[in-house]
Length: 168
Image (cartoon, rainbow, N blue to C red; front, side, top):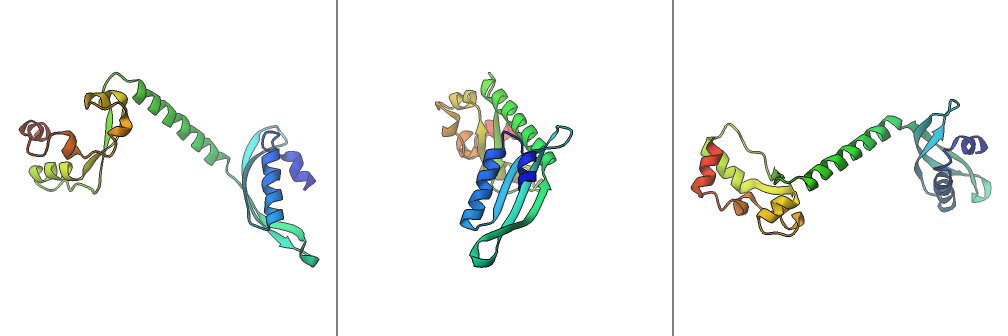
């Protein structure tokens, strides 16, 4: 235990110790993520998974488990978070209408064009948009737009302007 405590990253030590104490006190499985410091000073992320083993008299005697190095996963999660933040900032600050459509089911691209357009209207919906797009449709916030069907946004599948645009 003392050797484990010595390598804990100072910023994570309290939380890691608290989760261990909780697992022992409640006799429940341990699942904890924290950083340790390597001899050269580098930090590595660890995922600790374990179970409390009871000794005589029903008292906790030891912990059995495994520690996994999840440093690369943590770096990827951080990169993904930063990328998502950049994307969301770009979308929110753009002066152009930006949106993302999704479909309730895939559209078979081997179907005739007219059938694909019908499927686009039947199964497409707005999954995300920025404030500019919302204002174009008379809404105060993007949340009011999310989930709207393409059919409702574009004036129906029989609108000749829409059909001509999708044929191009």
